[in-house]
Amino acid sequence: MCIAISKPRGVEPPTKKTLQICFENNDDGCGFMFSKGGVVRVHKGFMTFKDFWQTYKGYNLGKADSIVYHFRIATTGAVTPENCHPFPLTKELKGLRSKKIDVPHGVAHNGILDITPKDGVSDTMEFIRRTLSIPWILEKAVFGSEEEFTNFLDCMIVGSKLAFLKADGEQVLMGGEWLEKDGIFYSNSSYMAVWSWKNSEYYYPTYKTWFESAETVLDKSAIDITSLEQDPEVTCIDCGDTCTESEAMDTSTIFGKHRFALTCMSCGSEMYLTESLGLSSIEGSELVPLEVKANAREK
Image (cartoon, rainbow, N blue to C red):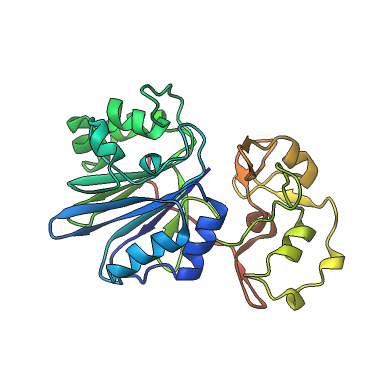
């Protein structure tokens, strides 16, 4: 269901390895935007990680820069460079489809919106055209922090997350809890490890097969994979209820070739394997505890 990444000023950008994992888990195209020279510079439409990295690396962005990244899994709209995120906040289709554009504001979206797109665009593009490009929405609900209008917009994006960027580098994150690591905010945990699809189009790995296949991020000597249960209990980090992995898989949502997340049977929240295990990352033989921090406005 995509991943959006918010890198505010004052922290180091994600590593190449992290960004590559994001692409491998969300491989329907990607892009990034950053503030520079009084504008937001949007670059998108990269269908391979190599193309993305060549362009991104050329800007030599670092700790002082405000950056938003997006890696896509298509749910509505075709898999095309034009449908990649981020987007400028404009009603004009030409601008929304542009792969390189300088604008006052930009946005990246993670989730699915309850909206019927027109003209062959994605749900995100249609939502921008209908709602986010309206000046008072930007002024009051997004950048103005006026509670009445912010609550109105929050109700429209239930289940989604939005990352906004202004020309001055200010970022606004909406849509509930974001995962924070080293000062960077991630809309979900698909930056942590590479999933394995094996031989089935809709294959979703169990804990054991996930550990066996995650060679790029895991020193397999760190854990005895033979001791892992075949159908272990998983605990939802949102509501605290437990169910077995197979039960959570039965209620999960399939998008195209991706069976992307387990789903809590009680509250419907997505549960990724690392979250269910209580891990935030796997680095060599070190298992790092999960830290989940809310970065949405207080209601």
